[in-house]
Length: 244
Image (cartoon, one colour):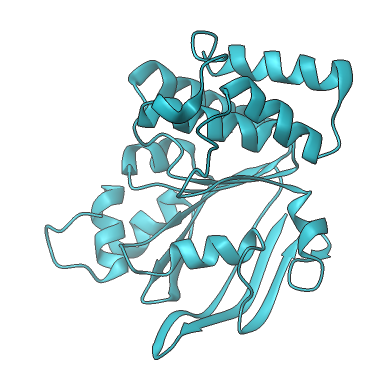
């Protein structure tokens, strides 16, 4: 479970996050939506303990991510907005390296690496250096890296961005499988069809604040729109016709 309570973060005179509070439950997929500059990425970075809030609380399961960031990170699998891959390492070496950092080794690590290579259709790229990979190929490696230690909590920032149709279907199946296994999944996406199909609950952020929370149906009823994209535009205060 992920919980952020009254979190605030300021950069100079700019308030990026202004009292954000919400929880992402185990056994559920929670969508984090907002227009560019709304504070989504800053919120995610505080949740995965690479950025400290100026005030407020961030908890990963029962761990305080501010006072015990490494313990919190061990409970997380993260696909960030910037992948941070090492260009001279192969896809397989990335999984071996990050699995070892999480304390996985030997036959267990080898088995887990092979499972993810097959699951994400990475067999043809597994032993190539990532420096020449396409965006979609880098996404696959970063996602596999996030899942290598089989974490309880998974944070995904635009997980299907740049993927082809079959790879997108595979990622969606993985997300559903994580939920069905009782994991906590929090993801950000601009694809409203994906959000509507996957999310059990949605948190909408605008101008650094949570402006709405609920199931897709609840947000539609709240705004009076049948289309989730129209509901999001209304809730985020965007101009009519503008899309995230």
